[in-house]
Image 1: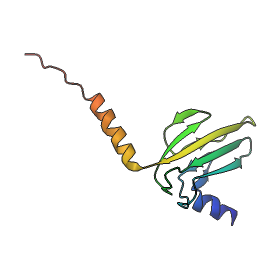
Image 2: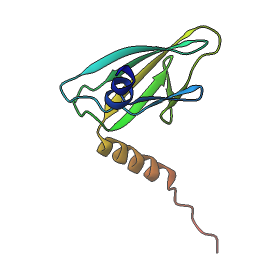
Image 3: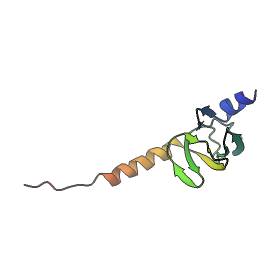
Length: 112
C-alpha cells in the first residue's frame, strides 16, 4: 500500500540508484515532504504545488542547484540530499523556451 501511495500519488519511482520524480498530487495539496532512504544515503524530497495544478512541468533543485530532467541520484556516502520539486504550468515552459530561442537567433550579415 505504501508503494502505491509513493509511486501513484507522489509520482516517485525508484530506478536503479536514482529516484524519478513526476508528481501527480491531489489538487488540494500545496506541498508534501518525504524522506526516502537508499542503501547508502537519503533523499529528503519536498514537492511544492502552490498553484494547485496536481501535475505539470517540474522545476527541480538538488542541494540548492538547479537540475535538468526528472532523475536524482541517491548519495553513496551516507549523507542526505535536499531535493525540491516545484510544479509549474507547462505554458511557462513554452514561454521560457520561446525567449531562449529568440536569444539564440542572432542575425549574421552575409558577406558579398
